Structures are given as C-alpha cells and as structure tokens.
Image 1 (tube, rainbow, N blue to C red):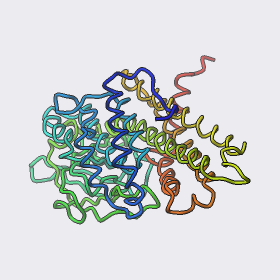
Image 2: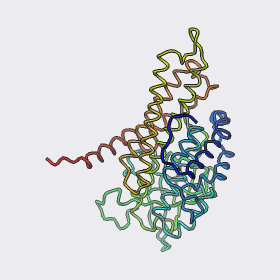
Image 3: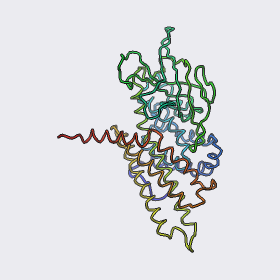
Image 4: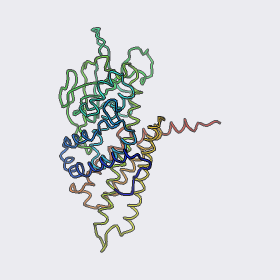
Length: 404
C-alpha cells in the first residue's frame, strides 16, 4: 500500500475491514477484471465473495444482521473495490442506497422484512428515478401511481424508467413515481412523489405481472454490471410497499439516498484515480526512451506529481464529506464538492496515465484502456458536474447570505 490516500483516525476494526477488502481486491478482482469487462460478463463469483465478506450489510444495523458500520467505512471500502473494478462498486452502491433509505425512512415492518435479507445479499437492491426523457430534472418525472378502483388500497404503477444499475440482477427496486392523491392542483411537483418498494424476480423480460426489464443497455464502459430500462404497465403494488407508509415523501427520501450515493461516487472516482496512478508510475519506471526510464524525464515527473496531488485532494474531500454525514450533519455541500472534484480529477488522472503509456494505452491488452472508458461515467452518475455546481452554489449562497 502506497503513501497516497491514507486516512487518519481509523479504528482497529475499520483498518481490519479495509485490509481484508484490499486483499480481496488484489487477489480476486484485479486479476480477472479486464477479461470480464471486455466480455461484459457479470462478476458472479466476485459478488459471492463480497457476500461472504459481509459487504452487502456493511452499513445495515447489527440488529438486522449487518455490520452497523459508518458511511466512512463504507466509502473507503468502495474506494478499494473501485480501484479493482469500478463496475463491482456499482453493484453494491445501488443496493446500499436502497438499504439506507429503508433504514432511514422505512416502516418497522419494511425494515424487519427487507434489511436482514439485504444484509446477507439474499435480497439485492436497485433504485430508479431517471426516465428516457429526463435525467437530472427529477421533478419532471411522468411515471405515475394511482389507487386501484377495486377498493383494495393497492396502487397501479405505469411508466418507463431508465438507467437502472442492477436492473436485471436485483430483486428489490425502489421506484419513484408521481402520486397526486391528497395534493391539490398547483402543488409543487416534488411534494407529490412517492417511493414504491417493488419486489421482483432477477432476470430479463417480464419479471412479474406488469413489470418488464427489456435487457441490458450496451455501454461504452462500466460493463459487467447490468444497466437497464424498467417498464411498468398496471404494475400492482400493495399500500404497505409505499416506503415509510405515506405518499408524497418520495422526493425527499430519494434525495437523502442520493446524498450518500454521491459520497459513494466520489469514493469510486478516488479508487479509479488511485489505480490509474499506480499503473502510470509503474509503467514510467519500466518504459525506456533515450537511454533511460521515462520516469527520469522531467515531463513525466511533472505528470506524476500532478496526478498524485489530485488523488490526495480528492480522497481528503471524500473523507470529509463522509465524516460530516456520519456526525449527523447535513452534508449536501460537502458531498456535492467531493463528487464533482473526485470525478473531474479521476478523468484527468486517468488521461495522464493513458498519456504515460503512449501507444500501449490504446491497446486492450493494457488495463489503462479499461479505466479510460470507465472514468466518464463518474462525470454523469448521481448527478452531472453541472448539477453538483448548482447544489454547491445554492448552498454557498445560503451559508454566506449578504446582510447588506
């Protein structure tokens, strides 16, 4: 383990967890990641190993069979996993967000029913906000849930969702829909949204009556993990599967989940950047030009210095955002900053490592080619850079409101 991206003040338990995860990444993920990624093959054996390590229950409270760890511990584990293969960190991130939303907002029955099975990975989570016609503008969603007119109290869901990570492999999807009941005309859109807990079979096609997962979306990078659409056609959901048992709270519940998700995306950026730096500095010492290793050329040393500084800065900001949330404070400002900086720096560090590799960076034989295709996803996942800057700008104006 190198000097960069160290975290001060960790407990012995945290250090032990991170050592175990790093060892797993080095032995079980890095040796197979590029081959699986090029095949776009789901990493089933890796997922089973993560279940055994307890990663799927890392932040789920001990009373529900989880490890009851902090957001910081989770983020540092994600950083390590993304260093091995970013797609694997995506498999656990959506699961984690749904578990977090259940823990924070679920009814007691919902927690008792889902969290123990989520802790073991028996139930696997995904969540769904985006639609084909919109991405960042969540308030414009058109998917709708209305009460069935048969007196059962059930809801019928209709609409089309987009960009579900784990859409095929998950068995529980938190779906955001518009529900207008009890909300008079003119109510703000975000106050008439509800999160529904949709249970389903894993796979593609019609996975339950009224619910279709058409198939995997073919992507530039971020392969292995399944990214899908979700189509609802009179999908019947009982009232006790409204998250928290109350309609109209969905937007707030989802934003709470995305807030911790942004720390996770920052951690992914940190992990990918660390791996790119490792590859770059290693290659620079092996490759010779003009009679010496290219690491002896000042131009390469400057690149390595810039890359290392960005790795360190992104890690520090990510750790600060996680610790703020763990302290019980609002962290949307810090999470937005961390997600923005880590994703931008990740892209730059990966590109510099690519440049250090020269022509070999363009070859699929070298790992940096995979990272070069993975980094762009972080620029748009969990809100684009522009959305992060909007959030940060508004929060700064709140904090520094002029008294004049």
